[in-house]
Length: 229
Image 1 (cartoon, helix red, strand yellow):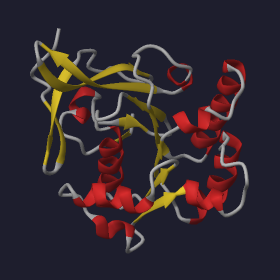
Image 2 (tube, rainbow, N blue to C red):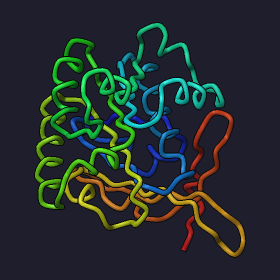
Image 3 (tube, rainbow, N blue to C red):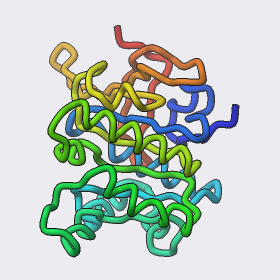
Image 4 (cartoon, rainbow, N blue to C red):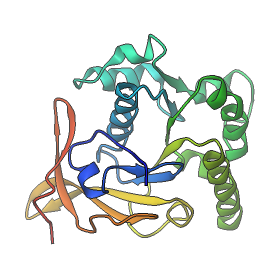
């Protein structure tokens, strides 16, 4: 099976080389667990492989996201020279709608032409938790998220959806996406540690254990040889 490497130290080892093609993958965790950094590294790795990416921010402003890029040894220039895109979707909506709540249909309408016209191969949406607020019931949310994921697969992009859901194993998103990676920021005997665990990955075997990771100058570095029990 053809893989799309994440470029994140340890993650590709845990997943037999990365995400399978044409999949929608959920990155879930609390504030401070490095979810956005994961997405930024994923986009930059695509540029290294001549795969253009889009980082679509729902809540955070573009300049704040670029500040995050500059705070690590990541390449800000890729968003200036057209090798990748970073778009503040909230800013776009403020110019065209009074209701700032965003639905998956809104995102689909925006992405439908953009993904094809700009030859996007990697997509990160940060975060879908804000989009979930649009829906009045879990049933409507699940139906619309399922349709949105099917749309993304038809576009043949590899997608990362970021979610603020802090409870591993819960949440509608985990049922309809192809993989779930839970990032943690937990207290272990008085020491706070960041952790990662792949709880679901369709179409492939994967490492089922929880591992610690560090945030280095060049991004996330997972200690795959260390297992947290």
